[in-house]
Length: 117
Image 1: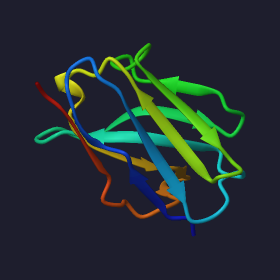
Image 2: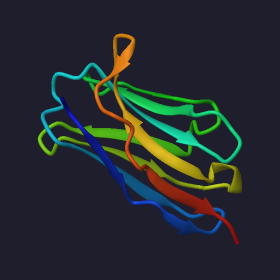
Image 3: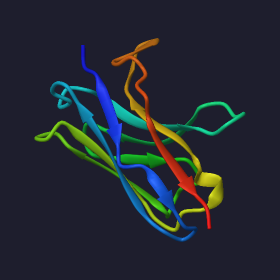
Image 4: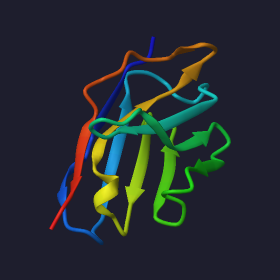
């Protein structure tokens, strides 16, 4: 079983940038899609971005044009480059990969992103 560990969050001003990392405990080359999710206080967890094993990305409309997801199979790492951050991007960010009706990994601690002036 692969476990994912997220890092890279922090406090940033509106308009700023952050790069999140999702490091897997094992190989990710065979995982069909790996996704970034976020959960804000009082809200449901939402899908932010995903990347297929081919490298093809997909994004939620709310982050399209501002976030970029990438995947380094050699480093077993998925990145989320976030730019032009807005206060509404404030949330705990998680990565995981769907596996049928289940998940590759248990949900980790995530990494907190706070966008505030």
